[in-house]
Image (cartoon, rainbow, N blue to C red; front, side, top):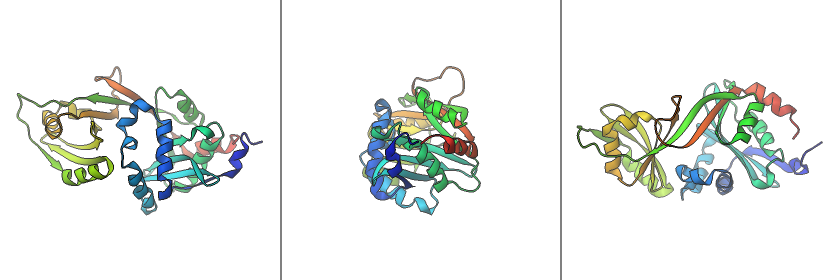
Length: 269
């Protein structure tokens, strides 16, 4: 017996450019409001960007997006990141009117069939540690905790007493992308390391390594480029108490795709 009769009229397919606006609306409705500015989905050009992304996803892009539609209207979507042996569920969101209707389970089950590559035997995902409902759902699918991630925000400060050297690679194209979409990325090189830096709106840089905090050249470079921006770092937690103030913490999970599909196949829709 169906839990919600509307599920009969739900279809699963790969996303198309026309779906981009609905995808953004559903994300914004489901994502924590205080954390939204740290994502690309809060930026003015995100709909235009998503149109281009889903238009090219059949060419072998890392990200692949699928949607669930009810009588032609997008009511849920899921985005996967493709790796050789791992299919990572980066996002899955259901519009409030269809939550608890079985749409999320149907979408995940059928979307995996649409996007899975032959060598992918593992399924991974991530949720904020405060999202107990999502973590319980993943656990029911056989996914177990793996890495923890900290979301840390600091303000870059110029070094006054140490020699510094840096160079930007891709900054001009990055700034052009920033003007069009409201976000971009470029490479920051110092004598110590190379860092992928993202610009988010007018307020934030985003990085993926705590190493940058201890690199005076990198901190000076970011302060010089825009002294008003804060730096958001999302990276694997080292264990114990966070070394820097966190705005959020995420928990990654991982398990076998065949186990998750077996559970999804037996759950009542």
